[in-house]
Length: 275
Image (cartoon, rainbow, N blue to C red; front, side, top):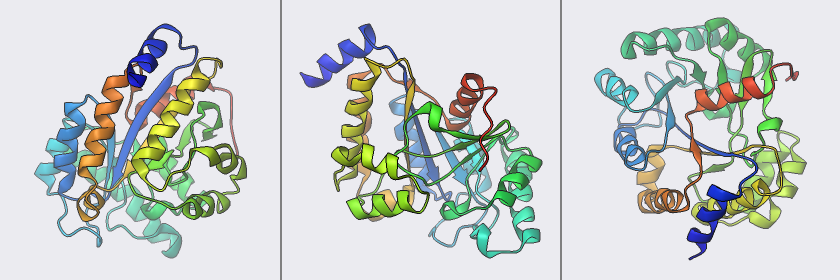
């Protein structure tokens, strides 16, 4: 009954739009199962794929990456999954440039989005991404949902996330925001916290719905994770339930990461945030 009430309000009364995007990292073979699940519910996503990843028991083969790119956006995640802040400038440059060229050769499509492994990067890495031809970067900053709070470096968009498909403690979210000096994001989400990722994500969606009725500002929900974690921590069923609830509620605009970044560019064409 609650979902039906929310759905009616989203369709008839919503003032601001709520965009929904997903992204998943590391290029594990379970990405193919995940891509099919996303397609079943018409949810768009971006898969950030390295050529090799030491955390994956089985990496996607090139023909599998090509198949995945027919369903969803594919983004760069370096060639060998190093932490960029721990390697030389020369190696970082090669990892960023070469992964874009490799994925474009594999998929036959332009690769526009990039995600640094474990979310660590510096200003020089942003400059390298822009030079390589990427137009957006996804970080691992969580609890962000306002379109107007997304940072830009000229026309390059830096996309934070909202929640992860992983059961975090309240302290984990606090540490995530403290590292980035995002105390306001943490405090504004304090009443939404739940150690269960699915419950917290639902809390966020209901919160976004409520503010969409009174604010002209558009918001987004960015869910991210790793397909190998879905298997390791038995999260497949909870993710499917969550997607079903999205379908029941309705009213969301589903985008991949590049689509969301393009909306940010269109909405704030003159804004340039230093990073």
